[in-house]
Image (cartoon, rainbow, N blue to C red; front, side, top):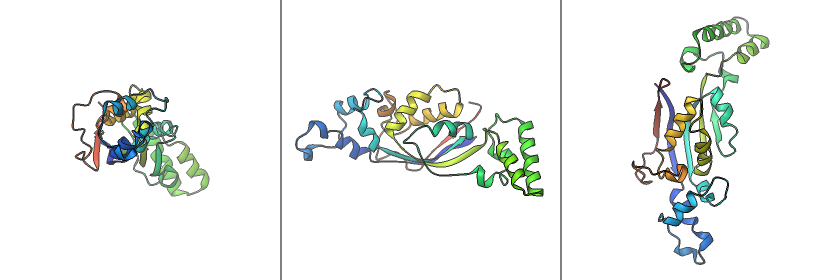
Length: 210
């Protein structure tokens, strides 16, 4: 069992709903944070149309644990910001290979990395360090603090929910647990969608075998 998401918090939902009403209002003091049919229409606009731009104001922050392979793909998203992260560059020689690799990394691969770790610890040359660093498997799990928003998550959900990497599919399932997740997915949500009662610091657990 692996915790992929921890310490999740959501900010700005009510205010973003309120300001989404500005374009059609002359007296903005009349704009409220009530979710209306117009709110639903804007949120459901096609990705890239610009009509759903208010979703950018709904900020989500969390700690995310992904494989190096998944992180390589995540970095393509402009508004999926890495606040800080674990680093193989700094800590690869200290990592417990058995603990930090996903279940798809073979025992043969892990054994080889351990040998390279020991070679470096015995003889700490730049060459030995680079040999260890460049042979680290893409199945190593690293945790990063992420800051993103509903608009970016809407793009990710549309592109990744059926992805071949299991952690992407799981991440998209987790997106559906967010308050008012229908703004992202376009689908009805039958759980607790009250922004005020959504638990701060919510975690998500994932089993690789699922």
